[in-house]
Amino acid sequence: HHDAGSASAAVRPGAGSAHGKAILLGEHAVVYGAPAIAIPVDELTARVDIAPSSGGLRIESALYTGPLADAPARLAPVSAAIAEACSRLGAPDPQGPDALVRIDSKIPHERGLGSSAAVAAALIRAIYDSASADLDADTLFELIQTSERAAHGSPSGIDARTVTSPVPIRFTRGESAPVRIGAPLHLAFADSGSSGSTTRAVGVVRALRERDPVRTEALLARLAQVAEGSVADLETGDRSALGARMGEAHDILRRVGVSSPELDALVAAAHAAGSPGAKLTGGGLGGCVIAIAGSPAHAVDLSAALRRAGAHSTWTVEVPAA
Ligand code: MEV
Image 1 (cartoon, helix red, strand yellow):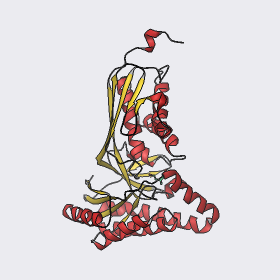
Image 2 (cartoon, helix red, strand yellow):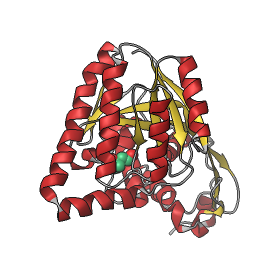
Image 3 (cartoon, helix red, strand yellow):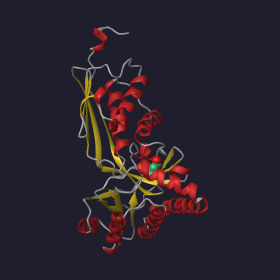
Image 4 (cartoon, helix red, strand yellow):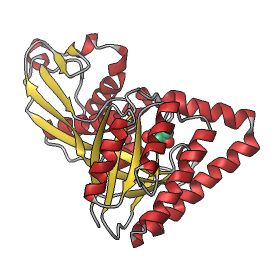
């Protein structure tokens, strides 16, 4: 029970942001406990602002604008993050406060770039900022995971860790450790233009693992080795060794059934344009390809080649030495 006074209590403004992510190596195997390497993508960010408003809790986003209570099913992860964060903060009724939650994400949706986790992270940070409450890394991780489970089944947690990490990470079983980058890494990203459903892609691998366990386990084990081996390449700045591992990883991901003709064509185009290695990134079955470049200028050239090969859009991304 609460009276009209508390139901209309004004919230304080709050803001939060988070960046996108890309998995360099180890997606899918990471779901089964293998290590994976992921980088923050500062070029693509999500921001959430909370402002006092009237008429209950309203959402304003590219996907939907209106009362949270009437939001479509695809906003379930946003609702889950709000409900869980409010309940942790002891806010009695997450549907109650008169507030406008504005979501502004530059991260393409369903392209394997961590859009859902970054929006959740920005939202949770904004809610804690509005409440002037401290937010530690593990609470943030758990809250993002609540949202991610509403988005896609059984997330490994790599997205949740990467979208809140300032540096590249090696992730395994919920834990992340920074990876040293010996020389700046230049990448071209290419969006295939079709969306990838992480739930569906993870389901494809699970089904293959049930049908053909010996072969699938061997492929996933090799993905794990390739990811583990890349830590040394990143430390020494060995682009050609890293590229060879990425090419092998793409081939394995294709064999476990999560690539697509469009992704394969973009990988081939990157290799033809002189990339030491390219692969799909994230869940696959659509989404993006990442390609190693030799220099910032080469990353621009690779982007142009990828657009000529049919990419919907491209970006260049630099991972600084750290
Ligand atoms: C999604 O970014 C990466 C996958 O390995 C799924 C997961 O780790 O939850 C495909």
